[in-house]
Amino acid sequence: MSQLTGAERASYVQRVFSRIAKRYDLMNRLMTAGQDLRWRRQAIWHARLTPGDHLLDIGTGTGDLCRQALRQQPDCRVVAADFNLAMMFAGQKSGPLPWTNADALHLPFPDKSFDAVVSGFLMRNVGDLTTALREQFRILKESGRMVILETTRPRKGIFTPLVWVHMHLVIPFVGGLVSGDREAYRYLPASSESFVSAEELADKMSSVGFRNIGFHRLMLGTIAIHWGEKDRSVG
Image (cartoon, rainbow, N blue to C red; front, side, top):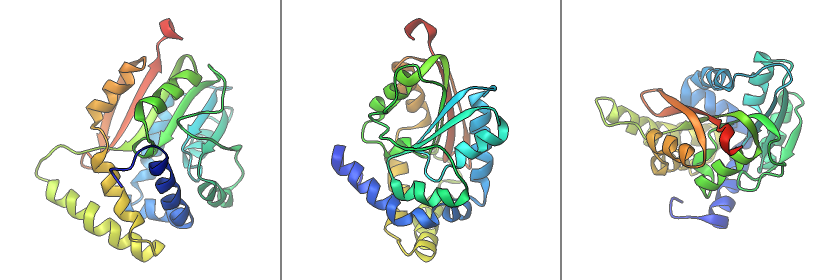
């Protein structure tokens, strides 16, 4: 999987998430002991939404971040976008959202359309990280905010063996039991370990024009929330 690029990678990711869509939310809760709900609250908090803000949740999956945004700021306007229809269909069971089919590398929105863009566990799946960041930069208004909730490579330390066991043994085993698809849950550690570090992601955000960048790690350093703003001078 890690050697796939371009269309092959996109097709593989489509198949993986289509197979696990019906159990996706349940597995998120089990894998994180429910902590993913708290992380989403923190991610939306960093988006600093105000009444009337237009928010894009790219790679929305079943729409958890959009729903959290509406809980924190009921007067914002959300768009829930994903390129996987099965995930969005699964999300409809939790209530209506303004869904749209969209590829993170070719967002179907005009320049400067949104006040904020957020993503949850999307960026390690895209075929070209820099292109995805540039697309999010493009569709943001001047001083617009971007927030990324994503897995990240943890620093080596006392908990390294525990993290390895959880990622390589516990997650595939539980994922296989719950979803019936153990292969799909081998994808999680593989995609996480091949993804850039938290520091490298911050550097890539800076390289496409984001400013006021920050991040913090969660869950023994395996999760990170990044945030940044679109530089007015290049808007």
